[in-house]
Amino acid sequence: MTVLSVKYIDTKPAYVMKQLDSDWLTKGLIDFEYKKYLLLGYLNSVHDDFSARRLYPPLSELYGHYQSLVSIRKNKQFLKESFPKEIIAADPDKVEFMYRELIEDDRLMNEIEEILAFAIPAMGKGLNEGREIYENVEQSLQIEPIGLEPLYTDAGYILLNQPPDKETHVYQYDITIFHHADEKYRGIHTKKIDSFTQSISNTVNSMKLGLIRKYPELPNPATYLIQTPIGYPEKETVMPVAQLALVRYLASKAIN
Image (cartoon, rainbow, N blue to C red; front, top):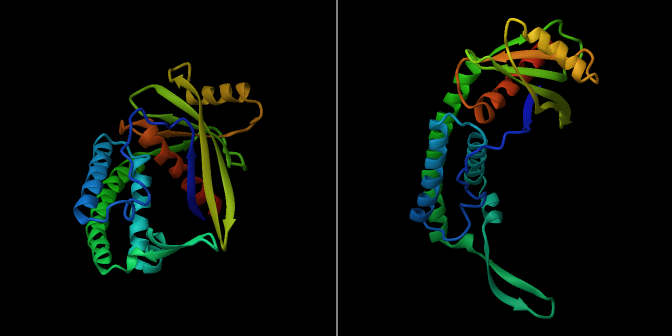
């Protein structure tokens, strides 16, 4: 079963990320130096985010751009269809325009290929930087069920804690399983609902009991403590990685 999507509420970053238009390759001036300037500005912004250990949304957006370029390079027809066209004539009787496909221009095609040759490895280098951070966070995570695990684990609570900090943040989660072709996919939706400070008198078990009293619609909720001492930003990094790790953890238990 494949993890396809993650929807995480309350993750709007406190910073403004530099954007790169989805059609940046074929939009505007088709010039290698100009496109290189645009791309390097975007990649520098992504690098700044990664240096601050902020993974999302930069990592997922960079991956999307990278996949798009790889697809364009493999599929020239896709490139042809995505490229703008030039109006060369108008037919007033049919109320329509006649277009010439600019991609037929050999100079433009060569320029595009030069841009792709630079951009794909440059984005790949950025992806490797992001993946390294992701793997560091993922390997640091410890997932522990609180109390007995119920048979139904597609909805419940995540207690997220970063020792030695005693603050524990509570997220309600829901996992959706849907089908596409011959595969099953899992999507997870999480929402922050509470915070607690751990102490001798306020343990994770007492937190779970408090959640049951406060939210009776889940009388026997699956509850998992997820901890990491890594100290990275929670919204942009730790929580997105943690929820994907939980999906894989639950999927592996279902198989076993």
